[in-house]
Amino acid sequence: MGELYSGLSWVSKARKGLDMDVLEAIKGRRTIRKFKKDPIAQEQLDEIFEAAMWAPSHGNTQPWEFVVVGPKARARLLAMVQTKVDELLAAPDVPEPKRKGLLSLRDDFGGAPYMVAVVSRPGVEPLEIVENPECTSAAVQNMCLAAWARGIGAIWLSVGAAPPSRGILQIQEGAQVIALLALGYPDFVPPPPARESYKTHIRSVE
Image 1 (cartoon, rainbow, N blue to C red):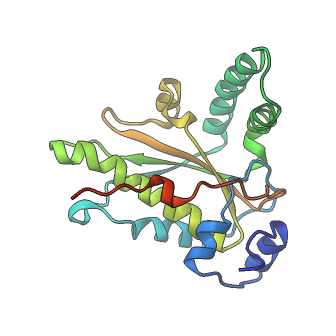
Image 2: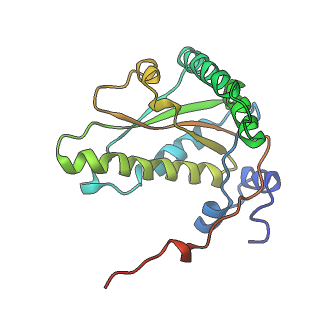
Image 3: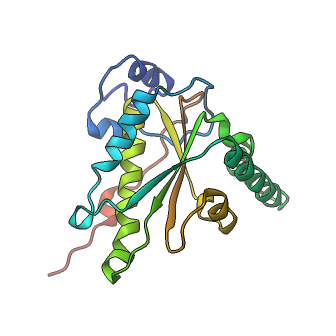
């Protein structure tokens, strides 16, 4: 675990086929906001999508859909994001870390070479309405971890849930965009953020 937080050095090793265990992937994963231009091989994209399919779902319903974002849709999404980012940056006293994050998002989603929206299909029964988004979120996490295990970074964006994005992505009524994932090889890996002890998040009932 000593090399867990070594940032780009770990990414380089992962790209060479060095495996990591699941806890290393969970603890080592970072949100990436700046990507290299290197394309992702289709074989590795297939692995990422395959990992998503193994997420838990009620009754094995697998209630998710993947919408690959092409150049035209990406340009429309970016124009929408740039307008919103400009509005946010116009506010006084925007903290510097947030400002940097917004600027990288404005710069063509950090230069990520691949984008995909992960969508929760509409639920009909009350249980489906509640659990479909939950299961789809688990699929997104699987994708992020599988990507990281191959040296590929991701940022989980919520912009896909904005009303204008639904039209751009051609989302059917009742479906929910759980994540807009930007994927690519990291150009910069941030240091690990502080984490609270799990002990402060536990309570018991008798």
